[in-house]
Length: 86
Figure 1 (spheres, rainbow, N blue to C red):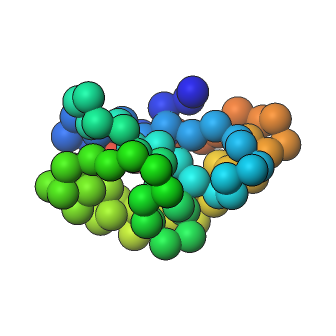
Figure 2: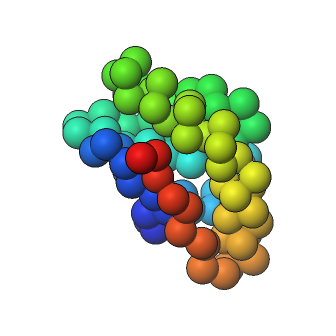
């Protein structure tokens, strides 16, 4: 699964899966979550609240890029890297 971004020990990954709709994966230590691109809500799994707040702040800045990457993957193209939080 391609890593699109990483920041503060959080890895954002994505692969195309049409049965679950546009989403991305957030990995933090042993925690994993699938998160909707549309509203940044958990679809499956969980990550600690502190990490989720950082993911949500990052998502607010980059949701359009996430959606564009979803479309690239849907067309079997390589996704673009997205900058992390600093």
